Length: 280
Image (cartoon, rainbow, N blue to C red):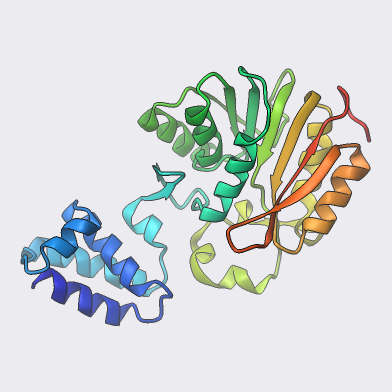
C-alpha cells in the first residue's frame, strides 16, 4: 500500500477523532521513523507488509480511544520530546503557559525550584534546560511516574533532583519558586469520560473539594517553604481562577494574578511570598 493511500484510509477510520489527519500522520511517522515532511515528499512510497501491519495495529488501538501519545510513547512539550506512559499525564500545550510565566519572572540566577506532581517531568525539566543554573527538584508521589521523569531528564540532559512523596513533604530547605500542575478536576466531571483523560491516571486528575483540595494543600505548604519574594505558580481549571486567587490572597501571597492559556481561558494563578514563613 502506498503512503498516501494508507493515510487516506486511516483518516476515514479515525473520522471520530477531532484530529484524524494529524493522528494518522503521527502514527505513520512513528512506524516509518520519518518526519511528516518526508511523508508528504514521498506519498508514492510503498509500505512493507510489516510496516502496514504495525500501522493497522496502532490504528485499531486509536479507534478504541487510546491517546496517540501512549501509542507512540512520547509527546512534544516546549519543543522537546518527552517519554509518556500510562503512569503519567500527557503534557499539553496549555501547560506551556505555566512555563512561560515562570521564565518571565525575575528569579535569582541560581534559583531553587521545585516542580510538584511532576509526572513526565515536562515542567521542571524544561525549566532546568531553559535555565541551567537553576537548582530544580522534581517531586511525585508515584514511583512509576518519577521513574519516567528521571528517564526524561537523562534523555534530555537535564540536571535535576528527584524526590518521592506528597507535594512538599519530602523537601528540605526553602525555594525561590514552587510550581505545580496538580489534580484539579472534580470527581464526577463529565470530561473524565471523554478523550485522552480516560486513559490517564485518575490520581493525577481528580481532587476533592470541587477540585480544589490539592491546590489548597500546595498553597498552604508553599507559604512555609518559599523565601521572601519567592513565587508560587499553579495550573488549574478554567473556572477556578477566582477561587485560587482568593486562596492565595487569604494565605498572604502578594501580587496575585491569573494568566490565560492559548484559548484565552484562566489557567495559571501566581502569587509572591511577602515574607519568609507562612502567612496563614
